[in-house]
Image 1 (cartoon, rainbow, N blue to C red):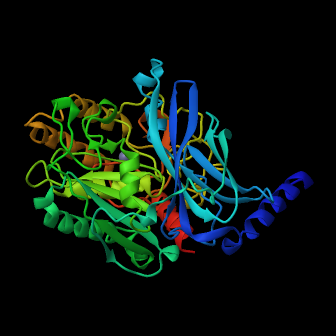
Image 2 (cartoon, rainbow, N blue to C red):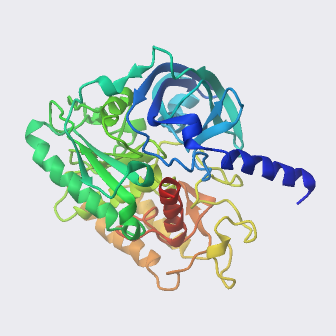
Image 3 (cartoon, rainbow, N blue to C red):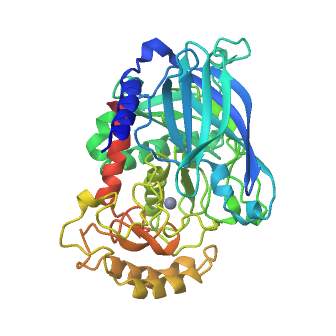
Length: 471
Ligand SMILES: [Zn+2]
């Protein structure tokens, strides 16, 4: 380490240890809404409204992001001293859309987004940066915000729209992860089902390792959001519903992908309670869900086929792996709507994906035994040929599960081969890419559609995120 790097190291440390929550912040939340507009090669941000929300639910001691996950980074500076006083990584729906055919064709589109930060006492400068293809952040937007300006909307003065309940209470929000569960497509008559679904998914998550061992670090909240109708939109079938949060299937043309573009409505409702993470249960019966880092998770809550109810539990915990812990998809054989989401040779920011062929600079090298080969051989060609047949099946056909069964079982037999079990190495095929992107284990909740647990690398990543809220 040369002197230049030592100096750099000390500057960073002195800024982060100088963070004193009471010096810069009040115990409430500043919600900054903005529009994120663009097309391939262009990206524009524009402020919308700024809100004074309830108490700050995040950590009051870890104000600077030490995880370095996400496609974007929010940074907040105190304008008087110039010190960075808060930062947080996140990903967005815009970013995913940015790699779809629509964006590549040059169509301009706008998404509404929100940044939530502790409420500053004085004027701040807020910046948004995005990674380039080499994963280096570049600033795209910068604005000065005066939290004491009279245009800041005091949302705390509004009457809550729906009933909220703290269904798991382990203590003060700034020392816990506050998970908020909302329902969409639950009509008035479905509210008892929502209560029991929320309890079910809360239990499913907190019984899955490593969440199970960290149960006491979580609070769980629910808000009983009432929709006018049961179910949500299915644009591909021309089925449209009056669902309160605007979730829909067929996002980016993928039948199973559920997201909402109604960010303002979602945030107005969510802001009733202190929250760090949002999960939206969708009262509909087509297999599906979604999860974006530091945005939200969605999951269907009515089983599509009898005997396959376990798939909903799988989806919920898998999608929270994305939205809560920044994990990447480890599967690569199912079709997605993205083009070049990951590129061979470029190291992804996700803690469980790598392009590295070298054990020495492998980000999870501390988990790899000296006897394990890198890359780690597995029966990939065989697995790929089975998956190619599965990929030809129509997911929405009534006999889909019947036709899928033998292929699913053959694939599971390969990934359950005892030869590869419990090995951490680099297994080729991950992040929708068959070659050049690697995952840590043969199987994981982020890889196969099964109730398998998280591999050791993903588990450690989840724990690190929990720590960032509670320590
Ligand atoms: Zn996924």
